[in-house]
Length: 204
Ligand code: 5GP
Ligand code: MG
Ligand code: MG
Image (cartoon, rainbow, N blue to C red; front, side, top):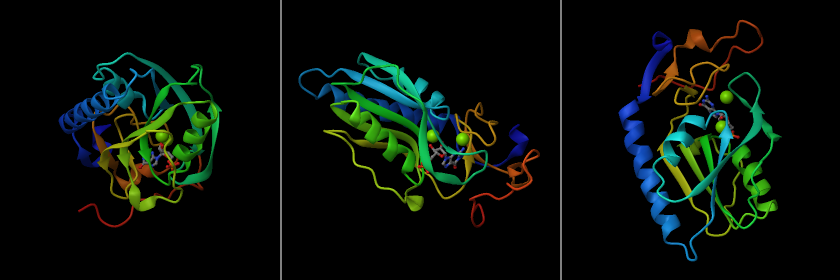
């Protein structure tokens, strides 16, 4: 599997250090709220599963955890641009401070849709905590709710990345680091129409 990777963008150690500082920041921001907040951490499945697991273990406050599933990517590397919530919340987020945890904010359409959804369910605040942010590709702006904040682990260049929860065709999620695949591995065996990637330029 590692032989499919052309370049590592963030190592396991770099990820651990950054997640730890994000968790400290979030813990400090939540602790500053008065009265003590009721907090729900909502991950976007499947990509955010490792990030969420690492993050919540370092948040030193009681939190509840749930996942939503939103589909906007088919099996290629370009977003369809119209996310839909394909698996909703089990938790009642009414009156809660929600931290929406994502793997990547790319065009912004998934997060925009989910923030609106959480707002409509009565969340007191909605923050977004994304492991990676690709601001260069933003098409949809989103507004946080209440005293919600935007947290981002790393700014990601305009490459299609895999690892640390993120897939290509449902593979590579279990890589403990984030990297870019060699071009030959961005191809599909099952769908000959999907052979392109969003990766641009050289990797230097
Ligand atoms: P959006 O365009 O709605 O902001 O992003 C939707 C989703 O596309 C992200 O949450 C993420 O799951 C996926 N995505 C965006 N960029 C990448 C990428 O570089 N690699 C992978 N594996 N998924 C991505
Ligand atoms: Mg995602
Ligand atoms: Mg995916």
